[in-house]
Length: 259
Ligand code: ASP
Image (cartoon, rainbow, N blue to C red; front, side):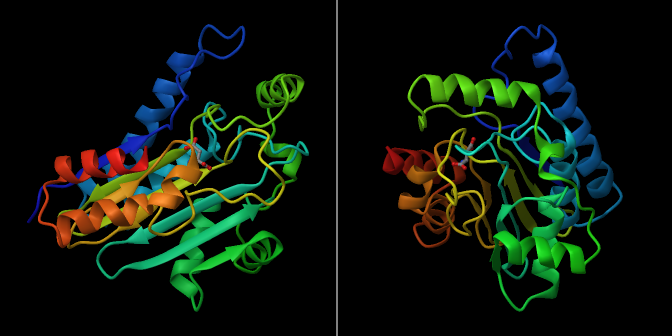
C-alpha cells in the first residue's frame, strides 16, 4: 500500500485581500481546509485519487472566495463562463469542459464526460446540455456572480480592459491514493474581462491539467496562455517519464520554459 497524498491550490491571487473585506483571507484559508478535509476523508478510507480530487475541487467551486463555480471572474460581457478538467492517471482517461454557463459543479460535469465518453472535451451549450441530461444541478448564470467580481470587472474595464497579469484564484487538486494511482482536477472562471469564448489552460489536457501514474499529476494556475504554449502539464510529466528528472527538476525546468 502506498502512502496517500493530497495537494490543493486556490490559484494565483486568491489570497489577495478583497476590497474592503478584512475577513477574506481567513475565509479563503477555511475554504482550503474544507477542501482538504473532503478529499482526505475519501483517501483516508482507501478511496480513489480521482474521487478525492473531484470532491476537493467541488468544495472550492461552491466557495465564493475562489475563481471557480460561484464567485468566478466575469468575462468582458459580464458573463461567467467556466472551464474544468479532470484526469485519472491510472488509465489516462480524462474529461474536460469549457464555456459552461449553468452547471453548478463544472468539475463533476468533466467527471461525467470522462465516465460516459465517447469524447474528452465538450464546450458551451453542448457541455451544459450533457449536464442537464446527466441531471447535474443547473443554476442561472447570475447565481455564480458576486458583487466583488462585478467590481473587479468594472475596475479593469475602467482601466482599459483585459490584463493577463490579473489573476484570481483558480482551484485545483492532485492526489495519489493508497494503490499508487494519481489524479488531477482543475476548475476556473478564467481571467477577468477575458474575451467572450476564450478558453484557458485549465481544461486543456496536457496544459493546465494532466495525470499519468508513470510520472505525476499536475494542476496549474497562472496566465493560461503561457501554460498552453508550453504544454506545461504534459511537459512536466514527460520530463520525469522520458527525461528521468525528479519532480523538483521537472517543475523547475517547466517553469523555466514557460517564461
Ligand atoms: N489558468 C487560469 C486561466 O488562464 C487562470 C488562473 O489560474 O487564475 O484561465
